[in-house]
Length: 176
Figure 1: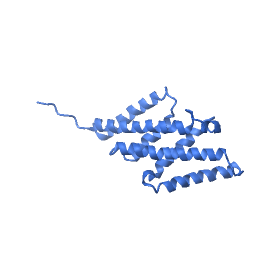
Figure 2: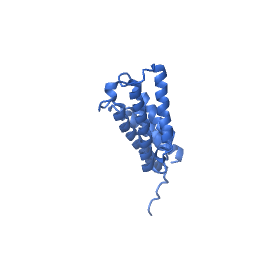
Figure 3: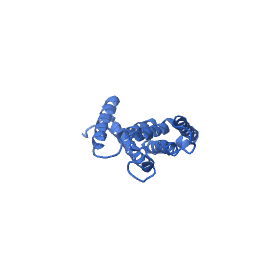
Figure 4: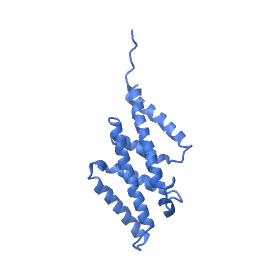
């Protein structure tokens, strides 16, 4: 199969599988898609194990930065209004992620930002940006739900890379 056809078939098949399977589970679908894309952003076609480890390190770091930012916003110790405090906290979190990109294990800042953005998308659902939820070990806590979703999404990326390679491999010649 030609490479573009293999890519298209693999993407369609796995997108259907992921979407269908997530109807039965409580994990968030879109962070899984973000990790899947991050897997390829980090070279998953050429080095799947390294890309999976990297996407998890980067995106989970972004989720962690977002979780800490959410806690700082909720427990505002300064007395500043939310219109001032929230941008300062988000700016500080982005600054920490930017500084961390100087470390080779977190050098791909966009993938950290993917995790940070996934954190806020997840917390945008009513009831999740709540101190009781964010400070408890429960399935709907972003710091619990998203790392697992990112792992599964990264594994879908790896499966995608393997399926593309299989579909685009030249057909074996029959033995004579």
